[in-house]
Length: 122
Image (cartoon, rainbow, N blue to C red; front, top):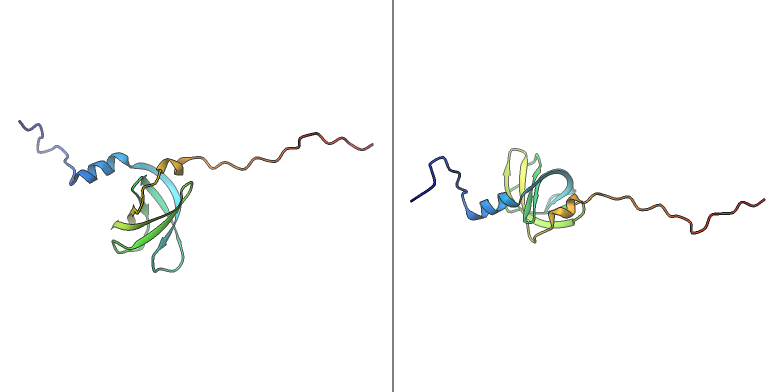
């Protein structure tokens, strides 16, 4: 017996179902370098997972174009454009990352302290 009604959501692929479970919504600024284009661009990352991300990027980029992302807490990550839609792009990473590293707080370096107090000269 089939328990699925016509209104039941079915993912287009098993990969799509896995992808939606692992995504982490956030707002993170990153640097984007598009292969063959001059310079870098700042983008807003809205979703991040071990295998890729979704970012706001207003310029059209062809699917399959190689890119490199500079992500806070992670560093440079190579990938390619997996999809584009109305001011957004999806990037699939060449190698998985740990997205929790991007969520770690940025900590300022400790101020140096002296071992012994300075005695005033009288």
